[in-house]
Image (cartoon, rainbow, N blue to C red; front, side):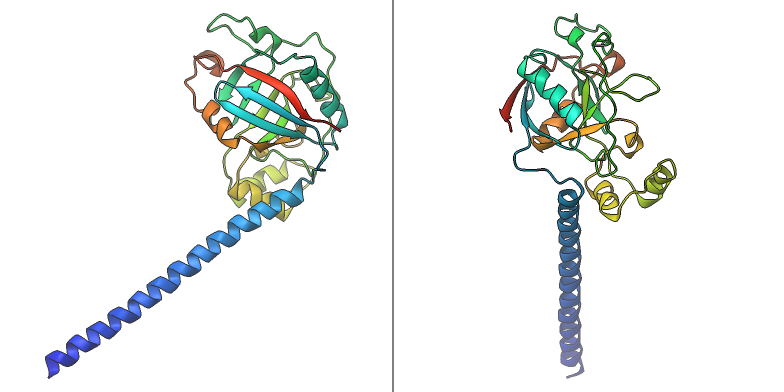
Amino acid sequence: MKKILSLLLVAVFSIIALNVNAQAKKKFAVKKAVVRTSARRAITRTTKIKDNSIKIKITTDSGVIVVKLYDSTPLHRDNFTKLVKAHFYDSLLFHRVISGFMIQGGDPLSKNAEPGAMLGNGGGDMARIPAEFKPSLFHKKGTLCAARDGNPEMASSACQFYIVQGNVYSDDLLNGFDMQRSVKYTPEQRLVYKTIGGTPMLDTKYTVFGEVSSGLDVIDKIASVQKGNADRPVGDVRMKMEVVSDK
């Protein structure tokens, strides 16, 4: 009789333990879903883009990326659109790619560059674009940004750009970046950096003027290719651009 009672007690406690474990897993799954949903909502709130914004299709050897250009950075929007319509970017390379950071292209000297040649100085004879820093536009993953040299005005290159891949960051690291900025990160921006990722160290230093609407996986593919000197891909990654929607 005692043996039967012992077995029944063991069975009851096992059932209770299984129920507790199942409830804990359910709560954890719900919490993760809430965080992901909050991050998606934060992305929408932090960068409001009109439906009629200009879209650019970037066809690469690794796939297709579509970007939306921000209306709140009109100088960069109009300059980039003008170059795309003139087929300036066709056959140029993504000449500098760093995994966990960004992929960069737009150097006109890359079109006919020899394998292994150092790139990144092309376009210096073109007029720079004045900086258009906006507190609401930050370097989250997938943002389209303007490269630049060390000019004191922080004006952008007329043609070179990069697309952010980035990493996720903790609150402690974001606090450090916050101390370097005149504008503090909003709770929504912090959530994006902690869940989606980006490159916060570049905020207020380089102009953000668009973002990827499809093709984030292509950025990851390009960022992971084998690199040689100066982070240039060993195998050329070429691009072709076209405007797929206009105002």
